[in-house]
Every structure is written in structure tokens, then in C-alpha cells.
Image (cartoon, rainbow, N blue to C red):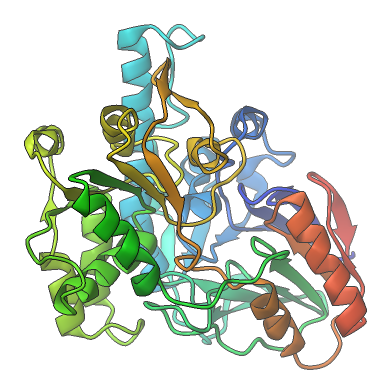
Amino acid sequence: MDVRIQFLGGAGTVTGSKYLVQHNGDALLVDCGLFQGYKALRLRNRNPLPIVPGQIRAVVLTHAHIDHSGHLPLLVREGFHGKIWCTAGTRDLCEILLPDSAHLQEEDASFANRHGFSRHSPALPLYTVDDAMRALRHLRAQPLYQPFEPIPGWRVQFFGAGHILGAASVLITVGGRRLLFSGDLGRVDDTLMFPPDPPPAADVVVVESTYGNRLHPAGNLIDELAPLLARVAARGGTAVIPVFAVGRAQAVMHAIDQLKRQQRLPRSLPVYLDSPMAMQATALLADHPGEHRLSAAQVHHMAHGVQAARTPDESKAIARHHGPKVILAGSGMATGGRVLHHLKLYLGDHRHMVILTGYQAPGTRGDALQRGAPTVRIHGQDWAVQAEVALLQTASAHADADGLMAWLRAIPGEPRRVFVTHGEADAADTLRGRIERELHRSALVPEHGSTWAV
């Protein structure tokens, strides 16, 4: 029987990555992410998979971000009983991210029910904290480079991908084919993570394309952030920074710590970290020395340079601090979480600033703010946008188009086919064109739900 790949997510969009690999009656899922952004995409999260979850023998995760791991609690609840293989860093982050994802959904459903703005009665979370905890019991950690067999006869290896702690590319050898899944690839010049490892030889490649049509500008996060924070502090305003709890929060915290140590920002400028999940993710950097660029001292300074809001009451108390301040809160695309309450407080005043820290998926509040929307809808109400909105260009943890091409170019031999995924339509197709023109390799952008024999 042929080896087949079915694209159940991450095809034509930058979220929901799920790739079903089948051979000789066995099935393995690479990534199991949630769709985010437009409602039409989010509705896919409730659609049944085209395979009974109990028939999937194993799952292999590239990394812990919710758009790659966030569907796991549903998969387990619906009957998956195999192992979920990942690196130790990914396991540790999933133990933070999945319960938090469930908790946010429970909170949002409860808030909607209390205030009556949901179209559903009652509003229900996609899954619960109990579902997430059950999924975590299926995780199994595996070191980089060491081959293992998640299914008898299927050989898998992890290779470092940069991007965030624990992120890996995945090589699957099965049925005489070598299938390489890039996962999300990091930048060579990332401030936190090491560059991606050189890729191994492969017959078929599935590569992400988040920045497939763009190049990162010259410069660095520290220099880009400095004038923004100085400007908002000078006018007595508050900078609200929606951050991804894993990766982006730590990069911004490190940049602010450096700016204060360089005396480019006042040491007295209060910085609040309103994300228990980001606090836990920061602590994990100390638990994984040697897997990132920061020294133990740098991690310590970064963590102690912010005032942590651990409880809802501590989060609310931030508003009682008048004068200039910086608030880092999740989520990174303003799709939920504590940042929404800060946006409601500060969006309506021109003294304040919202600093977006990277890619904003279409259909998210972050995307609306980036595009200059005069209002954004939060908790069933439209809120006027008077605050200054800035989008950082240097904070991304993804390789840009040249970085993706360099990784592909480094693959030994001649892959028979390249599938371009995990990108919006223009980004994916632009990268596809470059692969065909510059590398002379067959490349295509698969449609959602399509199946290919490889």
C-alpha cells in the first residue's frame, strides 16, 4: 500500500496543523492543532475528523503552540488511546498550555453565559480542563536525533527547529519513504532560541510558510521596542502588549530588561506580566539550560524584572496604578484571555498604545487592530480604538522567506515533492513559486482535506 498524507489542517491557513500519515492500515497524526482566526475556521474545531480517533495509532508533535497541539484534548476525549510523542521541552510546555487553553475556554463560556451575548444557550467550551489533563497522560518525551518506533515499522526522529523551547522538525521513515515535516522553523538570529538544525535527507517535505512571502527587516527587537516604550512613557500612557505566553513573552521581557540595563528606559518604569502561563513558561527556561541562548543569570534578571499578576484580583489591581506602565498579557492575537480586559480599559485613550508583537491571523482582534479598525468587538460590545497601535517587525520567532528557502536548500539530495502548508494563501503560493523557480523541485499547496500518495 502507498504511503498517504491527508491534510486535515494547516492547508491554506496558518492554523490548525494536522497531517494524517497512513500506510498498510496504520495511521499516525503529525500535529493536532486548533484552528484560530476567522469564525469559518474556528467552526472546523467542532467538525469530526475523517478517521475515527481510536484508529490513529500515535501522534507526533512538532511543538507545543496551540495551533499545533490544542486539539489533543478533543482527540483523546473522542477515543484516541495511543501515545503522543514529542521532545521533553514540548511535553513540559504542553503541561502548561493545554490546561490553560481549556481554562480560557471554560472562562469565556462562563462569561458569555453570565452576560448573555452568546448565540448558544448555554455556551459550551470546546473542551474542559479535565479533558486536557487526560490528554497529558498520553505524552511521551523523546530526545532529539534518537530514532524511535511509535508504530512497529515506523521510524521517527526529531531535529531541532529553533522557534520555541522543544520545537522540532520530524522525519518519518515508513514504507520505503522518508517524510520530513518542518514544523515551525525559527530564525537564525533569534534572541532566545538557537537556529534550526540542518535538515536530513527526505523524499517528501512538508514545509511551513507563515512568512513565505516576506522578509524580516534589518534591526532587532531591542532597538525597535525602545522608542515605542519611551514615547508612551513620556506622555504618561500605558503600553498594552498582547503576547504569546511561550516565546514572545520571554523575548519582550528580555528586551525590556536589556533596555533598562542599558539605561534606555527608566528602571522605575513598571512592567506587569499578567499571564500565569507566561510565568510558568519563563521558569521552564531555567529547567532546560543549553536548549536556548540565555544564561541562567539572564533568565533570572528577566523573570525578576516584571511584577507578576498571578490572580484575577492582582490583574484587576494593575489598573489602579496610574502613570506610565507596560502590561504584557495573553493572548498574542487578542483572541481571549486577560489582555481583553486591559484593551477595554486603554483602547479609548490616545495617550495609550497597543504593541502587537508579530503575525496576526486574519479574523483575530489583533488583525483588526493592525488594519486600523475604528472599533473592535470584545465581550459582545464594540470598543472605540483611539490608542496608538504599533506592530513590531522584529519580534517574530518564524524564519522569513529567505530562511525557509535556506532550510529547504540544505536538504541533501533531491526531494521528490514539497508540500507548502501553514501559511495564508499568498504566503504559501509565493513560497511554492520560489521553490519551483530556484530549487527546481515539484511543489504544491495542498487543499484542506486533500489526500496525496507519496
